[in-house]
Amino acid sequence: MAIKEKRDKKFKRVSARRCRFTRLGVEFVDWKDTGTLQRLCTGQGKILGRKRSGSCAGFQRRVSLAIKRARYMGLMPYVGS
Amino acid sequence: MHPYEGMFLVDPTLHAADSEAVETTVKSLLEKHGAKIQKFERWDERKLAFEIKGHKRGVYLLVYFEMPGENVDAMRRETRIIETILRQMVIRLDEDIDTYLVKSAAYYETMKVEAEARRNRREEQDGFGGRDAPRAPYGSSAPGGEY
Image (cartoon, rainbow over all chains, first blue to last red; front, side, top):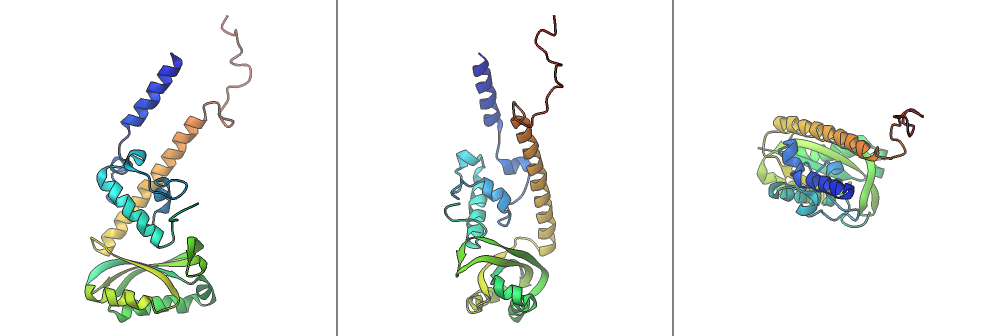
C-alpha cells in the first residue's frame, strides 16, 4: 500500500509539471545562459527531447537554437563531457 | 541601423599580453563598418568546451551595437582575416538595445530565483533520510514513549 501511494504521488507530481519556461513566464531563452541550457542536455551534451525536458513546442525550438549557438561559440560541448 | 548583439571569441594569449590592443581591434572593426557601440563587456578567460583553432581557453567580448544591416556580412567576413578573433556570433535583436538589456536582466533574475527554488526543493527531498537531514533531538522519539 505504502509503495502504491508513493508511486501515485510521484506520478502526479510529474504529470502536473508544465513547460518550465512558460511556468516562469520568460519571453526567450538566452543562448549565453549555459547554466540553464546545461540542464536541458544529457551528460554527453545531447539536447533533451521534449518529453524529457517537458518544454512546450515554442520553447523547445528556442532551446535547441540557443544550445546550437552556445555550441558554436564553444560555451557548450557538441559531444562528450 | 539595426540593433545587434555580437560575441567575439579572442585569442587569450594575445589578450593577456595586451588587452587594450585586442579590444580596440574589435571596436575599430565595428566602427569601421559604421557601428555605434552601446555596450562593451568582457568575459574573463575561461575554458572552452572544445578546442577552437588550437586554443583550449578563450576570452569572450560581448558587444551591443547598432549597425547598418548591409555592412554586417562584410564585417563578419573581415573577422576571418583578423587572427585575434577566433570565432564570432552576431545576432540581430528584435528590440532596441536598452529594452533588450532590461529584459535580459529580468531573465537572469528569474533564472536565479528558479535555481534557488530548485536547490531548496532538492534539499527537502534529500532531507528524507539524508546525512544532512535535520534530526530530532536524541531521545525525543524514543520507542514506546507514548505509553
